[in-house]
Length: 244
Image 1 (spheres, rainbow, N blue to C red):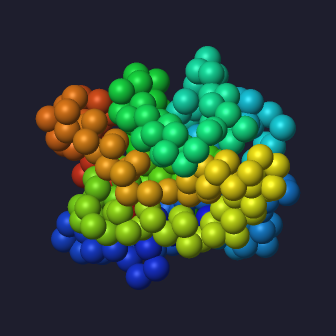
Image 2: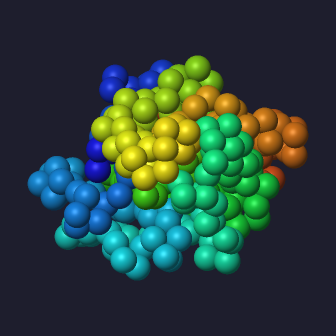
């Protein structure tokens, strides 16, 4: 739960016609019993928890669901795709790790299932009441793209979206360091650096998804309308909910 934070940022990001409301929408990494701060989670009074993980991730580490919270799955990657390459043991160097993550972010835009799941997530956020949280396992890629989409939808600037995305490296610094150190000890310093890249975030990965949206849909608005299938009413409802 080290990467648990408000999608509105520390002070509420400037958005179209106002600022993002704090305390309404949160993003996180793992929310299983071994990872959560139970008191913190309970204190938020969550109305919804949205899980972006694959079944193979959920089964051994199910979420802790506070009383009164709705739980929904949005399996962004799906259960048919082989993701063994995401294991640091399959990596050879940092450059390969960067290329891999860039491909994953492009997949968020190109894959029909991923688009359907991200679109569904936005709809439940827009329609919901009370504070909600969405998460995956590390809280950086599936969760990072979802947060970026929501922020852009409500009019947060591209610069602020990127700055918020890169905060993962700050919030998860300890976890990133442990993963890199473990891989380096097991397989050497080059693999350690590859694991460090895979455990963190970098601007080119997020930009790859936005660039893919531009290429396939003529821009972010086209991606929202034709890729995610979101109509103007849903976007307006989302903005009303998240902008003060």
